[in-house]
Image (cartoon, rainbow, N blue to C red; front, top):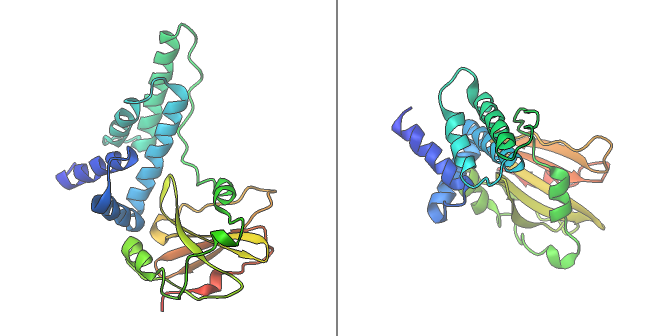
Length: 235
């Protein structure tokens, strides 16, 4: 492992633990937006931490250990190494507490729960939709975070507010609007980091997609057709 790789992985650990701040955090998130391998690694480590918290107590030191073990070069790959570690922890937990250990299960890296994102961020009234005042209002945000400007055409019937962030999905930018009384979320990510979110089968939400420049834009709402995807341009 090169020194630069080790430094990047140390930064990833610190980012997950909430220890990166200010310019250092901003620089790391820009790297996440353009490095699909790093973004995939982040999703894997968050899945490992989540599974460990479900199966081991106390979990405070376990997450970092699992990350380091999962990253060691091995033919099984990071996920398999993490799964082996979790099996060992489950066995140890069962022995320690005097009861049989539960059956081991593999670590799966799931797409973000966009139904939860919609429920938490969907606008509820006019007061929540004050934000984007001009076509170029958000261009500096996208330029800094993704390395390319993105412009939003202003439409009086689709007031745009944002940007918002989603915990656990650092490369994402969320904008919100509404069509009539129906809330709409616009999920913007780097194409290189696209986790390919999907709506639940049989659910009430629909997901529409547009790729433009470095970006992938998803529109999420209960509406039968997209309303906002044509508002965006890279000029």
